[in-house]
Image (cartoon, rainbow, N blue to C red; front, side, top):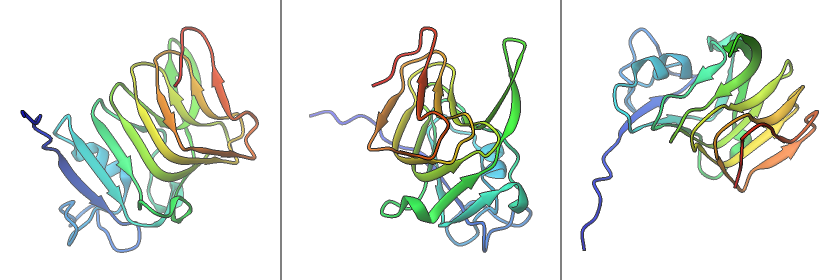
Length: 175
C-alpha cells in the first residue's frame, strides 16, 4: 500500500531553559518563546513542541499567537495542565478589533495545552479546518473558543470557568 509522505519539521520550545537568541529549536537548544518559534516556521508542516511551563507576556510571548496553515502547537501528551498559555492581545478582523490568545488558520492545530485569556477569547477560529485535541480552555473572559467561519474539529477538550465555552456564529460549523 502507498503511504503518504508524513514529513514535518519539529521545533522545540522550553520557557525555563530555552533561548530565542542562541536557541536552534532543537531538543538540545530549544527556543524560549512560542512567538519566536512561530516566526521561525518555514515549512507548511511544522510541529512546535512545548516543554511543560507557563507561557505568558511575562515570559516574552506576544499575543495573539497566530498559527499559519499546517502549523501545530503541542504540549506534553499526558498532562494538559502542565503546559499553560496565558494572555491575550488584539488583532483586526474585518475592521473590528478583537482580543484572543491564539488565532488559528486552515489545517493548523493545537493539542495538550491549557489556554486562558483573562481579557477575551482563548482560541479564535476565523476560517478553514483547524484541529484542537485535548485542549483545556479555562478562565477565558469572553469565550473558550469562538468560531466565526470555518469548520474546526474539537476533540476531547475541556471547558471550565469561561464566560461562554464554545461560541459558533455566522457560517461557522464545528465537529
